[in-house]
Length: 123
Image (cartoon, rainbow, N blue to C red; front, side, top):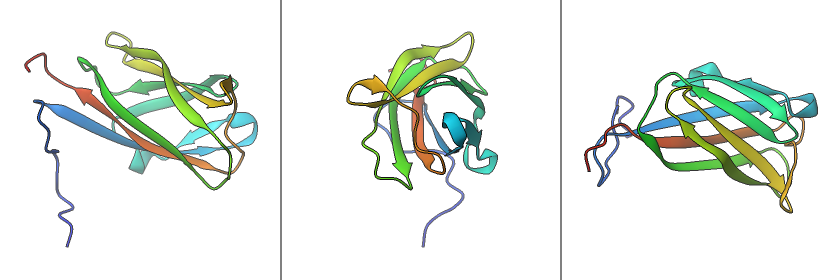
């Protein structure tokens, strides 16, 4: 049976914070964040075709890892962090691409994934 009260993850680095997220994609790539499955994220805003600015609740030292996948369509997307995490604005930009061109995810699909941040300068 899974332990549903886990608040930390095992890592070889100190103070890694993992933030999962779920976003529903609407018409013209408009994102709607699932607040209960995206604790730690303030907002996600579409700023252009396939480009999303993600604002986090807290600032961290740096982005250590991320994973994004699409549910609900057979669309050949890749995901790239195009603007690294900014500690003062608590923001990063994520771009969805098909054949190296920014592309909106299909209407009615969801994006799920996580971001892992280093929360300390200590190694």
